[in-house]
Length: 123
Picture 1 (cartoon, rainbow, N blue to C red):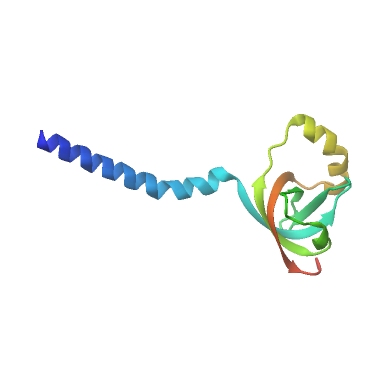
Picture 2 (tube, rainbow, N blue to C red; picture 1 turned 90 degrees about the horizontal axis):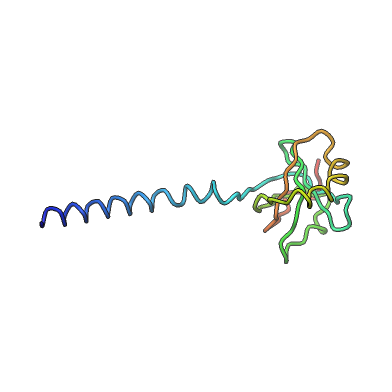
């Protein structure tokens, strides 16, 4: 009986250690958090902004409250946020503007939680 209790405790401690080790690594992948650097531009839509990353990808930006993108238009910035999962209906409304902005680039949407200026110019 003592041996079973001892083995149960060992098993519990081993599983707990495994979960504590794996949790932070899984969190980064599943959270969808991205940090991207590129040139910030004013979008075609009234309150729209987009970023063309240094890797040539077009990101349509949706700032969280308290995040001001307007003051950084034309700047090279680093933004952090979570990949936005918009409904097909929402995408249909914004697609005409996005197609003008992105040309032949790959495209994704991002809910922006922070912005940091890297340079006052995109060059």
